[in-house]
Image 1 (cartoon, rainbow, N blue to C red):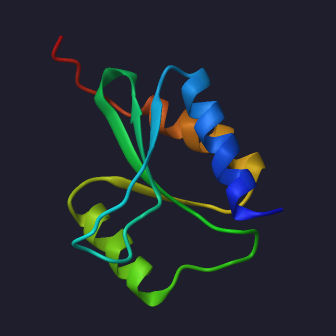
Image 2 (cartoon, one colour):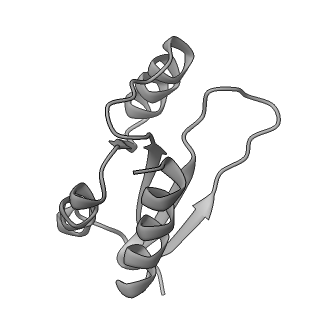
Length: 99
């Protein structure tokens, strides 16, 4: 299975839950996760998508730790079967709604 197939399914699954799964391109910092997920009730997470069995590079590990130290969830997704579990975990977190 290719990374882009996993990423495509991730976008589709998040959209089905009324969320946004945005491509995260940061020109000023390398090693950031591929996607930022915005879910109802102010829930946010970052996702690094990998082909099955592929590991994070050293810089990606550093960025993951940086984001987590700021209080954000960062998921590493390497198989389609993990998408629903990841979304469920994110949905269970306490969120903030200011509208």
